[in-house]
Amino acid sequence: QRTAILLDQLRAAGLYPDVAAPVFDTPSGIFDPPEKIRLSAPVGTIYYTTNGSTPTQSSTLYTGALTLTSSAVVKAVAFKSGSNPSAVATASFTVNQPFNFSLSNSGNKSVTQGSSTTNTITATLSTDSSQSVSLSASGLPSGASASFSSNSCTPTCLSTLTLATNSSTPSGTYPITVTATGGGLTRTTTFNLTVNLLTLPTVATPTITPNGGSYTGSVSVTLQTATSGASI
Image (cartoon, rainbow, N blue to C red; front, side):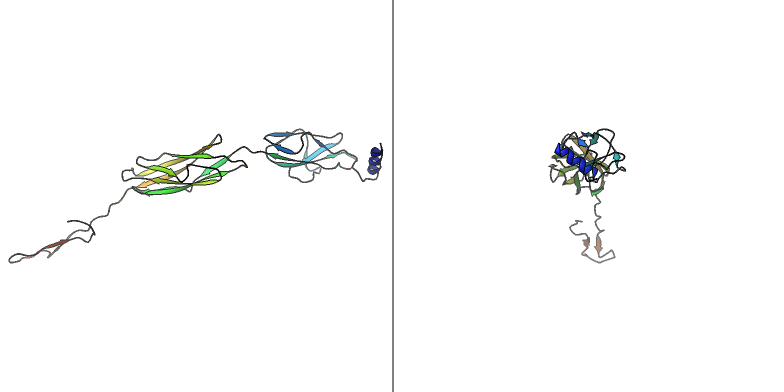
């Protein structure tokens, strides 16, 4: 009774809100999405924010349960005409985000028959929780092979994809798809691999010394080419 009398005296002096603060039906904590939060107040109209700022009557009007899909600090105030606003009610909610990631590459690549090239594959984590993903490549032309510096990694992570061709790999442009699978998710990224024909060098035309003429008796003729290692 003394408490009630004291509160009445404080309210009369304008030192204590005469409108009760809103009440959360769920206390602060950690939850899996989506989490529904309900507010109630004995009197007045409730306004709330989810960014930690103090609510005003320009804030969001509470009309029903809040659905949180990401972490938030929720603050609420009850307003009643002719009365001071209630105290601020505050609750912090941490919402666990399910594993998610994106996959990218370092761009289109070009290679000559019989040689190799590399592409950097990046798996980027987009949530707080992480799981290992496995990598694979498809769409390679005949005679080509693919290998990763790491066949699996935990985002955010990098893996170098090496594409090797041989002399019989057909020339042309091929769409290569890299697939990452893990945590019940599959992500892909695609780039073009252009295989160019292997151009063989031309052996220099042999020179003849002496270069023709009329001679009496025998003559020594020399044949040679400027191309190193060539045979005539």
